[in-house]
Length: 185
Image 1 (cartoon, rainbow, N blue to C red):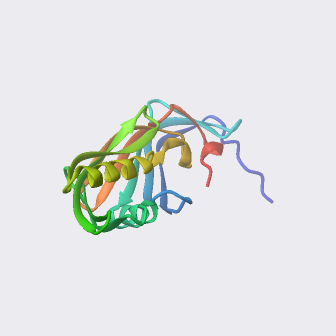
Image 2: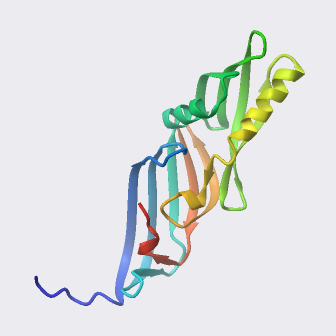
């Protein structure tokens, strides 16, 4: 085996790490995690990359994957008919079964809580009767948190959420010192 050159102290002009189609039990499938940044130094001890500024992170979840996840989380009394990601949020339609099926339309959005969790928030619940409305509100709370930073293979602090057509993009940052040993997959 040839001797490996010493790379301690090496300068990195640009670093990009992409993780695709990550399936973590009991979480929505993550279509892609993209970590990107500029100007860093590599230290062999601890496999550490020290960056000049925090690296940007994007976590993408597709509409189809979010829909599949929500279906597995809802109780039998709430049957999902449709879920769409739009620029204003997540449009969600279902049937609430109290005695008979009652159509429900909900506008949801995702919110960042303490830079460490993503929560579902109901902006508008359109349903007949107070009973079904309370049932739906209670069931939506059971989904929270929908995603936690500690569940991801990169040490991220969430900074925002962008609702795009068919894709949710959760933005965040990595600390300025990244241990490559902390990228756990």
